Image (tube, rainbow, N blue to C red):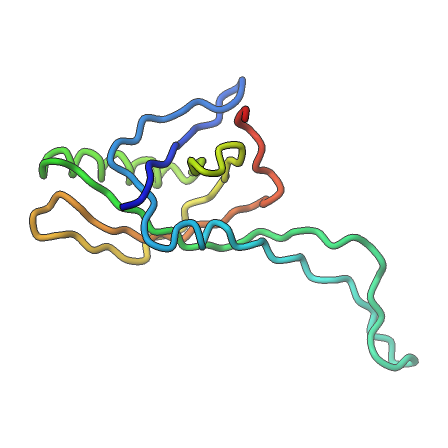
Length: 147
């Protein structure tokens, strides 16, 4: 099973942790969050008087990235599961999802929730797997927690 995640919200003085019970990293979570961000398009000049294409000399910048993360939602009873799921959905519908992965405690991922991709619930109604699409607007902005 996955590990517990830590969720946060921005305050005027920094980050404040949000209690989010029963939400863990799903299958492929670390692989998805670990993928590097793409680069923005290069500035080019395609002049008919010259062969090929000319690239402007500058340091490339990282672009926003799209990622799909899978979460496990758990509860020891159906009622607890529903409470955990509803709290998780409420946080997602807030738009801004700020999370930290236990093994990368110094990095905080600031994500924008886009949509759900898939949902699979067990028959006993106490466990599900939920995949969601996010955008990370600025992959260079991951600071925020003391090491």
